[in-house]
Length: 50
Image (cartoon, rainbow, N blue to C red; front, side, top):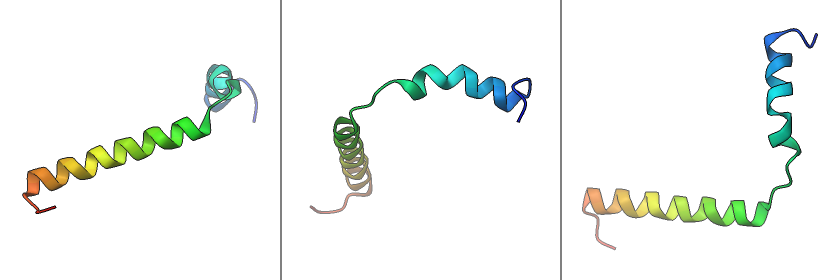
């Protein structure tokens, strides 16, 4: 794919974020916290008993 294509320009634009190291354990924990919050919100709105 030529670098002049829009996909090529997009890949170049996001390269710095893709090269940044990630703490995958922290990302996973944050995702679990988000999921827990989502489930608690749904339960609270629906009035389900815990």
